[in-house]
Image (cartoon, rainbow, N blue to C red; front, side, top):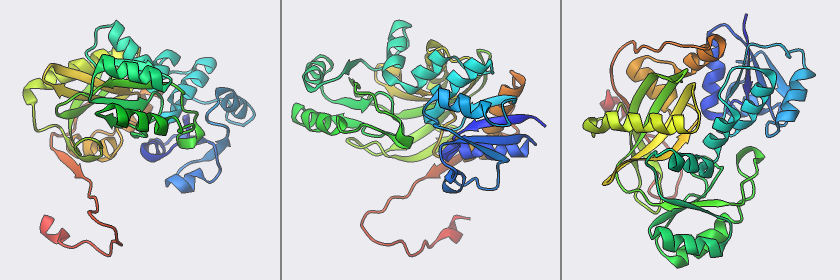
Length: 350
């Protein structure tokens, strides 16, 4: 039986636990708290736990070495925030995975933007700032409207649409108060300001096998209008801009290559602007919001989590759709305060 270590499964990462068990693997989860399996919904699906500070690679290394599981076949990050720390552990133990540099760029938007710029990947004009004075100067260079966001958070935490200097001052004061993010990870005290990219939004679900594209498809996204960017719907595969699909995928591939990712799943956010396709960001993980866990599986019969495990165990993978259908998810938002008592009309959907 092959043994897999999963670092802090949560949200999309719970599917790594399920997929690994379905493949007959011994699943050991490296977690920050013994109650996390119950908290995130995988209680009873794993074989054992290793407790460590998942923010620190040395803590993880010591916890593994002090456990009875210091011999294992693969170690995989199972949440966005642990991508870089897992890469450091894998590197020190000589295990398969992407480079520390690639993981760093996937977790730090400023580092990634610099690589896109250096290697000619089309993306937003940007500047990195660490105080209000430099932010005001950057706003004059970039021009309004623009986006202000932390360099190393996720899930759109403190991502602000700025259309004037008063709003910039207000939002910069607000973002400066953000010291730690999810799971207690420290927020960098530098921020990225970038031009607002107008146009329809897509994500590319891209899977590399030793630099070769093993899988690539485009998800169409519907979001609320500025100043907020709440994702309302995902359609897989996209039903619009089919004539731009090749360009969208190729741009995503160039962005992933630019930050030294050679293997595994990535979720690349793209805008189709009047000036062409531009990269918003590369995430070194499967797409969340049910894209990978439900839409890809329902539309193409592909389990990306299972394929990622195969890649880490065998160092190569083959991905072939079982069928070609379509799937979408629509998120419902309340228009007023209250208590949800029930949902009617579901029978008519059938």
